[in-house]
Image (cartoon, rainbow, N blue to C red; front, side, top):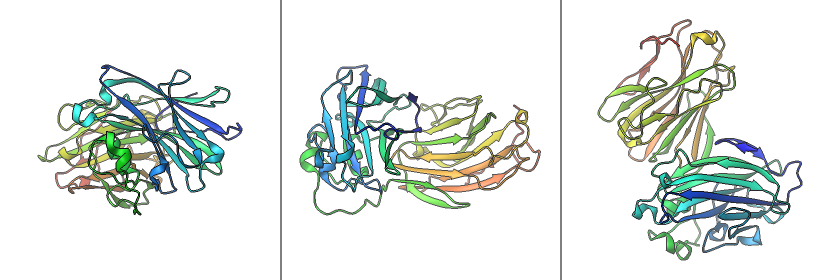
Length: 385
């Protein structure tokens, strides 16, 4: 089974699997790129509470011998193996990562990596559960959270994450709740702080679904992804209206896909043309003041409420904070819905807001986002598709 980013699958349910292996392979365009795998054993809050629950090249076995890091096997460059029955009772999730050694100082990043593959399989009989190709959308990142094994009703499932980080292994260690000195990655094993700690205030991992008109502050990261997801055969389009720091306004959509290399440094992954998903990547949040995410349903789709299509926007700051904004109202005769708004004007945080505002019945004029961050429906140009 080949799975996609964001997909969740059963691993142990109905299979009787007691040993799980995560096999990792990749190719680099330069032999100087040194890549290492790690695993973090996390509690229900997504926090690694003990230094021995971080498994990497200098610490290859967790407490209770539940998780181990091994040499190349079965075609994989690195393998992390999990003994399900040995996982401590306080561990509910295991995150698997790759980092580029000293990538921040050498200038190496995951843009230099190709054909990265994660295989989830039973190491006892070699039977593959699933495989996940990841990392193709990364650019300057030096670390990546590949995926997570997590407990759900007593069974283990796998979540294909594929989220990039800047800052290498040090950033990951801090993100998962451990404290390290600001030294090189080679010294991390000796520098992990084993003193009592609290959950970090700056970057607390979370997955939250916003209620109607609710907003939340999350960490302002160096990259933000917004995904429009829906469950219907209808063709919807994701629009990203923006205001830059220079008060330039515009929009990224299927006729203007944007680029990570030029202002406003926003890129749409293309017009999906089919049901499912479209993704916007904001490569330089610091260049922006506000963005508004909206969905457009073409006239050719006919009528039907966005809510019945289960339309939602998912905002991911690639620092472990994922915010979903679903729709709560039925509105069967609107072509537009504004779903989520982000305010980037704070120094360290950004505000994600649930907005859910619809265009008037049978009106195709788009929303407009203004320089002050406010927006209006039905006042933009009229779309035809």
